[in-house]
Amino acid sequence: MKKYLIAGGGVAAAEAANALRGLDPESEITIFSRENVLPYRRPALPRALAADLPDTQFLLKPASFYEEKKIAVAL
Image 1 (cartoon, rainbow, N blue to C red):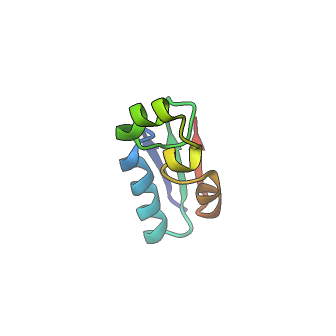
Image 2 (cartoon, rainbow, N blue to C red):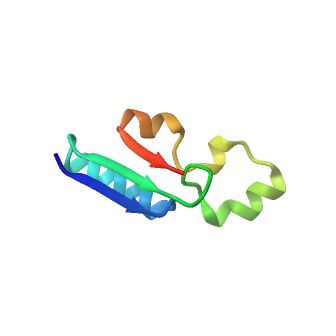
Image 3 (tube, rainbow, N blue to C red):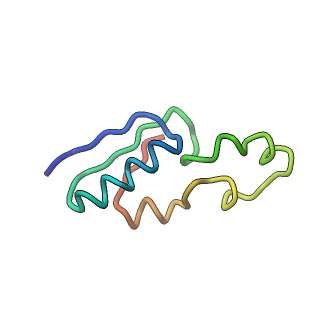
């Protein structure tokens, strides 16, 4: 079994992990991020903070997405 480690917690990391899962359903995929939250929409950060948006509009994918796809996220 292959192991994939993705550095960073942005859009590219989330999309890369999702693409890898599609190509290799049995691999171990881990996203490593210095952030303390799941990957989120960085361009929306100022608006999210000003409007106090809920996580569902701020995060790229809910936690359940990563669990269902068997993608580990190390924050």
